[in-house]
Image (cartoon, rainbow, N blue to C red; front, side):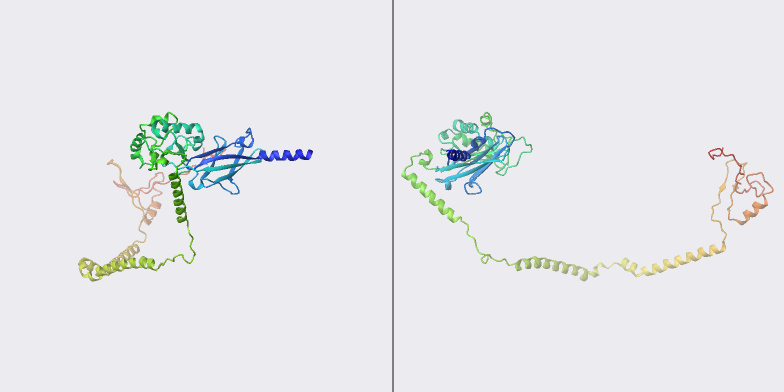
Length: 444
């Protein structure tokens, strides 16, 4: 009995950890699904960013090509979204979602079964970019309903029955730039479509914003329907507002689910053309031997021949100018200068030698000549004699100094001659007077 209870408990735990959900998506219509802790029976969150999710196609490492998964730090949940193409119509998919609890590293698994139902793709689409929202904000059904009401009630009344969101993606993932401030929104690109024809008001709006298509962004531009979008919290970039449409059959226009035989034939023809187009676009690889070889001889010939020819022409022209036109450049002054330039050098050399010989003869004649400049001191008064200082190298000065020392021992200037203008030698230095030194060896 206890063994049976253990088996039942083990089966209950496995059934709780491997949950299954059944979902449905339509071709050409946006599919969204929110992955949150309640799906794995986790009721509370203790730490921030506690749960992590990794969805993938069952038995495959990645999701289908049309599906995308992103985690929102604002809502603390993961989101699956995408628009199924026609090639996925009528197929069933199984997604494995593995959840990780980062607090205790517990893992749980959930299997999502999805069926892609067939639906005609809406031929008339309105493309727009909303600047004040992120991609995760359009996961809110309330905001999506407000956006649809703007078209169903004001701009596009004919799309009241079948208007749907056919595409949604972040502006950054579509090639846009992140905002400079992290607090600003990244922007989201949204497409809404319907089978009804565009209303006259939508056509007028397209003509109003058509001159803005050449600009990358124009958030400053205001249109006649600006208030309609701002009243529900949408700020559009009117440079990205475009209408893409095409004529469609009557059966497709009214979107009748009970299609007639003509509608079924149209569906079969459409599928056949898609299969043929898929086979044509299939890339077929080629072998290495079939790859053509490129010949570089012509490239090298053109790369060297053309510049060589230009260089040869230029050299020929320069040679003709310098060689054959030489007689036109005759200058008699230049010829005379170059003919006598060596004679000028010889004359300058002879002149320098004669100057050096004159200087040497002068030094030999006057070996004791004074090199000190004689200074003559004169006073403005007429009664004062004019004195002249002799050179110390003069030998007569020493003789006069010794002969006149006894005549005027107390005079500071030795007078050499008497007369109106006396000649005096340099003054005698003052006598040395010995002083007394203090304690600090300073002369007092």
